[in-house]
Length: 225
Ligand code: ADE
Image (cartoon, protein in one colour):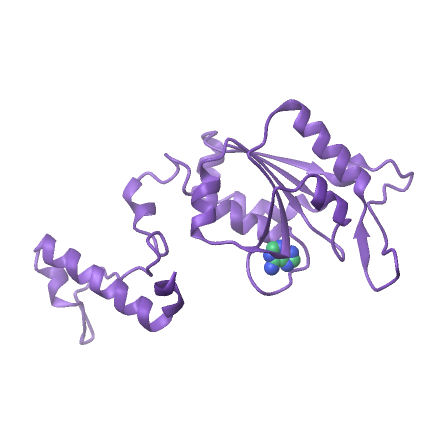
């Protein structure tokens, strides 16, 4: 899988991509991530990528030309499954979207900034607009990093224990059941007896019941979907 990230602040990605599972996925070339600085595609002599809003109003708007030039440049080289724009007014990101996107060959993620981007970029190029939650971030980079983490761990081979990703919370619209490790008794706080029984079928039934109970209590909205 190849991900092209269009950004003004690529350093924001350094931390999230340089540790643990993400680092290994990149080192082993299971995912290739390329950064493109939108500013490099500005034709303005000051390398400006933003301008005032037509009609007035606070905040700057990302200009069409640099982004269009960059996207055209990339599209000439390969086909993209999706050209994604991160924005608080996009569709809410969830595990289903992560699953779908993890099957992509090539995707572009355009990180939004300022007051937004010229609407015509969205109309002409963007195939999917994604928000990671009902709150406003300073820019789309953190949203893109969150999405990449959720997507890349689902790419086949990235997580060594294949079943581990399949039993995640949300994978079947249920939260995960509780988990325990040693000691079996911590200052009188005991691990549920059933988990020590060695009875696989009963343990599985207990986990399913707990997953349902937790979901009903904490996220009843998931059961309606
Ligand atoms: N950019 C700013 N806020 C955002 C959000 N909540 N989701 C995605 N992109 C954003």
